[in-house]
Image: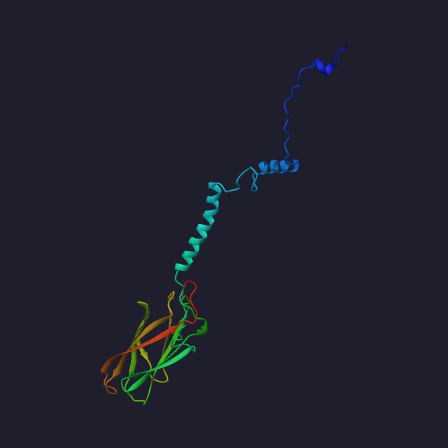
Length: 226
């Protein structure tokens, strides 16, 4: 009697089972791309995306420099607004009348420059003409010295015997020095006069006439912060 092959075999042992991943292929490809690029998304492995210490330093330094510059600008005092000074020559000329013995010494001052454009760095020429005015008499009056100073500097010192009675006058001119960052410059003038005590005596008395003139600046100089 022939036996069945199934009956002759022993118990059948089950072989090892293979486990298959259920992760979609698309997700695996995305993870590979992110790993190569250094990026990451929540839930997937990879780089964190946080900047390194060097990158942090690179980000902090420009911000700190900008803050320091803003603080310096805020701390720097604002330059004061320029305030023009008209001075005695705001119209380009002026006349001063001063007592001299029994008469008056009349002094005309003028500049050829435009007073509306004068600045502290300009050096205008100040011109003057002096003559005596009042009731005429026969006593001789002469200018023996003319002096002009400004900013501690002698601008002119003229000595001699100069007639100032009509029709004569004493004329001169001085260069006003630059006065950077100033709003005006004051010039001092000195006239030494000899006046005859009585006609024909030849005896003279000396009189010193002082005058001041302020030259104002309408605009700031090129070196001014004002």
